[in-house]
Figure 1 (cartoon, rainbow, N blue to C red):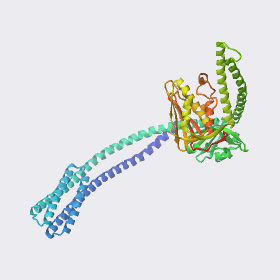
Figure 2 (tube, rainbow, N blue to C red):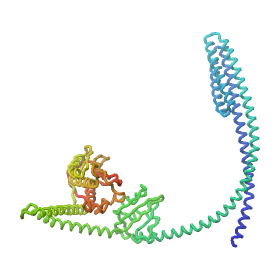
Figure 3 (cartoon, one colour):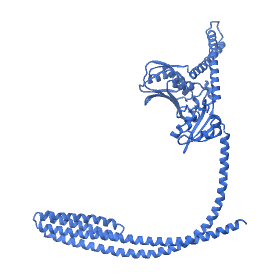
Figure 4 (tube, rainbow, N blue to C red):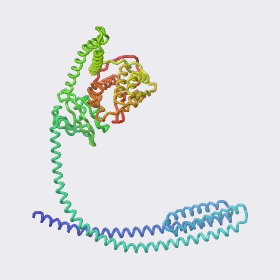
Length: 573
């Protein structure tokens, strides 16, 4: 019942608003129609006047042509030809304008075309007459012909102007007739529009009322959603802050204040990079410049008391700034350090007993302590093979530990890329033949500085991995090329490929594309981690591009200039 009075008020307001609105609309339509009709009539009259102006100019120009022709015939002076030429040009220009103006009227267009032909004929006759006069030759026939053509041209021009005048009168009459029809249609349409507008207004009023209630519900839902998001951000253990386009903090969740020691007021409006990321080498802020997501685990965040702790971060740009999410990984870094230390101790402690076991197996296999039965020799061979495999794994662990500890050395010497690839192909030729895979080397002569044995270790490891996953009959390409001031090596295969989510992970320790690879192919997933460490010691980069089912391409980019023989020690960050 409470809605009934409100509905009545709305109806009264609607009716009172519609009446003046309809009157205004009616007057506006009538005025617009009158202006439209006036504009049409004015345009047609202006058009006819413009046509008549050009036709009048043609008539005047014809008189000038005649005066110039007769003046030259009487005086014989060349100066009398100039007015003729000027008048002839005026005739041509105005006839061209008339053709454009009457293009929509076939009858007038034909008349203008006839005028153009007559003036062309007249010009030809006059030119002949002037030439005869210049030679003092008889020109009576040409003069008579010119006079006749001039008369015809003037008659045609007079007929054209009369036709244009009749056309203008017919257009005005047609416009008046159309105006009455349009007026009647407009009036009928006005009443129809008024009725429709009234009906639509009532429906619109109802729709607005429903829309208002729906908007209220939507606003309440948005408020609840915003509150849930706020609770989620407050409960998140990761630090989350938002920056504007200049890198200033506009929002920070409670985890940021807890991890950094700064209050919300101290963070708001401050530049994030100098305040929170003293070691940032423009990686986090690069999201604002490049528009690409930046992520990593090699950054630090500074606490208010000055101490720094390592974090894993993701910086995501958006239209007005960026969102940075980070979490403290100090405990994980410490666990990795202890794990590396343990691996180093274990690998070193395993080397001595493995050497002793292998020596004992060699003594037994060579029969120094007595001949063994064939069955015993098979067991010794199996044991020796597994000891060698275990020794290789221990060596990988030792190499990785030395790389991580910064204890590995590289001997930089002048090298030649194609020679290094040929050595790699020669070293892997036997395994490739056994796997039924063809190795192809493509490289120009490129000089650079590097440790040949270390780089040979990297390339053979990449080729070995490619052989493991290349079907029989396929190819593996070894390439080298110069790109700017760097030399780029490529190892491309046609194997099974690597899933996109694994492209970065395979360079980490103990990581393989599939857990089944460790059982089928052997290894602990350390080869690519060692390759990356060696390439980084050379100041280079290693990356991979791959499509599942289409193969993989590993790229090694190294500095290209040739350096003097020297060795140096690099500590990996």
